[in-house]
Structure formats: C-alpha cells, structure tokens
Length: 201
Length: 201
Figure (cartoon, each protein chain N blue to C red):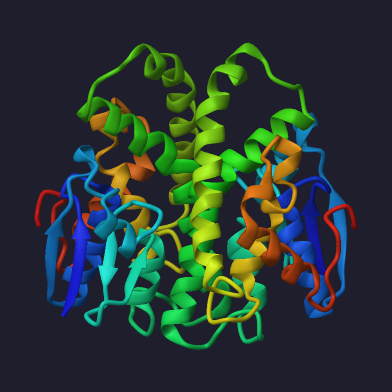
C-alpha cells in the first residue's frame, strides 16, 4: 500500500491526497510537522534528501518526492494525464508554471500568515510576493477565460496542481473575486467526482 | 522547423539548445533580450502569457513554454527519457527540484551578478539565496556520490536540466570546488556526444 508522508495544511501534500482519492487508491497517511523541523530528521532526509514533504513511499520503501512528479507518476495511464504528446507537454508546462511562478508567492504568503505572521523581513518581501502572486493569477485567469480546464478541455493533474494553492489563496490575503474565470474553474474542479477538501486527511 | 525564442546567457534557454543539438534537430534561434523587456511585448505575451523565455514554436505556430516541459516534449521516445515508469517519475522529481530548489537561488544570484549588480535589496536577500543555493548543491553532491548520473545510471534530461545553471554557478559566486561529486558529474555531462557550450547559439 502507498504511504504518504504529508502535512495536512500543505497544498503540495493535498495535491497527492486529492489524486489518490480520485483514483480510489488506498494509502496510509503519516503526518510530518514541517513547522517542527520533522522533515529534517535523519529518517526524513533518508526518504527525501531535500527535506520536504510530500514524499510517497510506493510500498516497497522506494520514495518519490516533489508533489508534481508524484502526481505524474500516479496519473500515468489514467484519465488524469492525456496520452497525446503535445497535451502531455502542456500539462507539464502548467505544472512547472505552478512550482516556479505561483507556489513561491501564493503558497509562501499563506504560510507566513498561518505560521509566525509577518516579521520585518517578511513584511519587506511582501509587496513583491503579492505582485508576483497576482501576476500568476492573472495568467491563469486569461487562460481560463477561453478554457474550461487547463489542458485539452478536461480535468487533469495540471488542474489538481494549480487548484491546491489557488483555492486557499485568500488565506494569504489574495482576493480572488476579481478573477472571474479562476472562480468558475475552482467550482468546476470542486465538482469533480471523488473531490476532497484540503482539511480531509 | 522548430523555432526557439531564447536568450543566449539563459541557462533555461541553454537546456533546450543543448538537447536539440544532441538530438540533431535543426532549429532557428530567435534572440529575445530579457533585460530590455522583450518578453513582455504583446507579440511575446501571445507566445507565452507568462512573459518568459525559452518558448519553442513547434513549427506550426503552436508554442510551448517552460524549459523543463520543452525538454520532456523533445525527449519523449528518445534515449534522453527512460521508458520505465519509476525512472520517468524520478527524472521529473529532479526537474521539479531544479526549478523549485536550485534555479531560484543559483540562477538568480548569477543574474544579479551579470545584470545590475547588488542593489541594497539584493544584498539583503543574498545570504539566504546563497544558503539555499548551497543546500541544493549539497543535495546534488550527496546523490552524485553514489550515482554516475541523476537517474538510472545514464544521461537524461534530468542531467541537462541541472547542468544548465550548475556549470555556471561560479558566475554567481558559488564555489563548486568543495562539491567533488558534482565536479565529476559536470565532466561526464560535458563529455556527452553533441555537447555544446552555453555561449553557443
């Protein structure tokens, strides 16, 4: 059985939980408190030398890290990842967009609000983080104005990857109400069979 | 024919140039000066709404963005991307590591040194950027102490993705000499057939 090293408030962990649930795959969840340094213990570092969650143990001790690589692994051969070459690349394009241009702003500001609040250093970085977070939301909104889902007109792991932190962006102070196409897409993602909430372990 | 919108000093652009060269695929290179805002013109934004290079025009006007998604697209079905499910996921794991835990530190500090130098704001961010850059190099070094290449004992797009900014890390002030396994791996990558330098258009 799969074992997921996870942290419940983490959007990156949630991506994997959500897909496992939608694939109907049973898994054991092991909570790792990232705020207490539990990803940096020798045991955790043996699973992922980069000291982050989520990590998926495939059942035989083989550990896979990086939320979007795990999504790709699990989705291979299912309806959540297209077969066609260009669409597969477009799915990855949005997933790399998520990790480079979205998560470092939207997820990080949410983390600050949830843990420790705004120190002087964080306060100094905040305007730039907010600007770049809104830039990412604007890119998504433009794309979703003409598209039901991110790739190929159907729900894929690109949607899962981007939904994870977008739907809780308000917890970092990002007002989504001006992004109408994003709001509609969030509803469509929530309506997918087997959907679970981020608070659901 | 492929057309690559590119910027010669960019490691992200170099990844694609290097793979195209090693695949023996002809392409037209179009230089886009990111320091002059040329990725933010209406024409550039139509190709990639996220306003970045590289962008690969597949020859029919279809544009693909995100360097690592482009690598994956080009490598599909070739020796540069394994067929086996777990190895494919491990290739992606290292590519997401590169974009999240490596590039934002090692590439960004190099960019600062090359363009504009260290403003007060950059100087304030520098110690953290350096710390996280060295953390990424240490993760690579530990892995490469036991592995010839990143995945499956052979040269893949995971190596190309990580080579691009690692081999010029010294241009951002990162001293690589303490990372012996990384140094050996850089030599092995450079020795691959069809290798080109980052300065080669």
